[in-house]
Length: 218
Image (cartoon, rainbow, N blue to C red):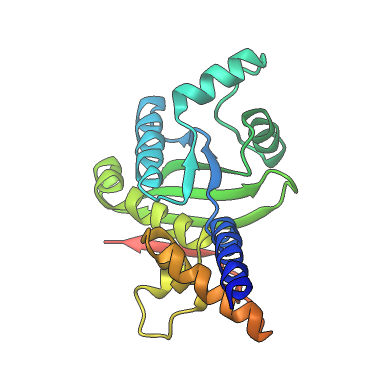
């Protein structure tokens, strides 16, 4: 009986490590949004506000603008705002992040539009592309638009977050993450995984693609 208890304890510790990987932080950088019909100052404000909103997500390790400037300056790279994927990948590699957000803010008619693309630095591929437009100008973007584009980015990076707003059954992934973030839940998860391994069962996370979206705000 004693060896079994020791084995369960060891598996519990291992499972906590595995779950920690499951909820591993995503290292992320947000390049300055390119201004299109707005001032550089307004674009810089919206870009910084977007960083602030994304920093509220515990799973995101976000590099602040000052850190980005220091790192890029040390590497002899002057450009912070990128207009193409190749530039974004180069910046992301210099910063040592897994993903980088690039995009633009501009005006068209009575709308102010923010677009954002999430690029995987290792592959150079666009993971998702989102846009939000608002009739309230820069004020509307600060009040509503930035929060919405931040939410869309979060959902794209962590699809299970979207389930919290639905009545659909929650995935095992969300349960494990909630337990781990709960502190004492790590022990529960550990024991659960140990029992699961001993019983010979296996579980698989369901990962779905997030479609490109456009949100219009009143």
